[in-house]
Length: 193
Image 1 (cartoon, one colour):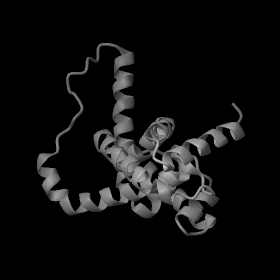
Image 2: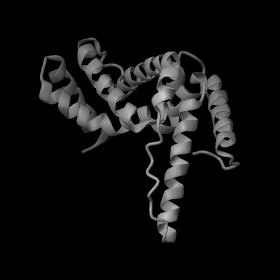
Image 3: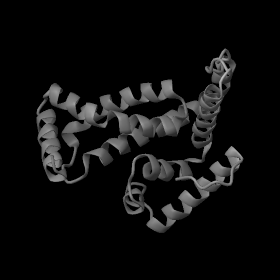
Image 4: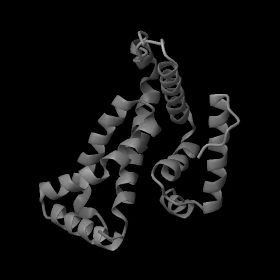
């Protein structure tokens, strides 16, 4: 299927979903859920919270589908909904941080066998990914949003600038600063891609 054919098929699904076809909407969700989950998980830093937020994104998308403008790319529209849900999540977390801190626990198991080099490497990679997720989640919103929209969602600087209502040059600067803060948080000099 060519890119044009895929886009036309998606537009037909959107039209059907706008007319109330839940199966068409389910097909759209199936097509976009993995990319959206990666975006949300990177934003919030917790896989379970990301899953819950993703459900909220899809509910909001269903409720707002009649207002969707077909001239706008559907994946970008979904990511804006996801971004708004992530922002709401961040505000709620800030308000409830003390309460949540009382009940937080490290979900990582401590009984991981380390008898082989492969197991130790996997554990180190898992720990590094967890630290990276936490470092991304801890970034200021000003830097986190463009970073995720570009690196996780694959939008261009110009697309991110339009969505965040700023200039491409400002997005370039924010991405550079986000990467610098992530390298510092991770204790690395390596470039993030």
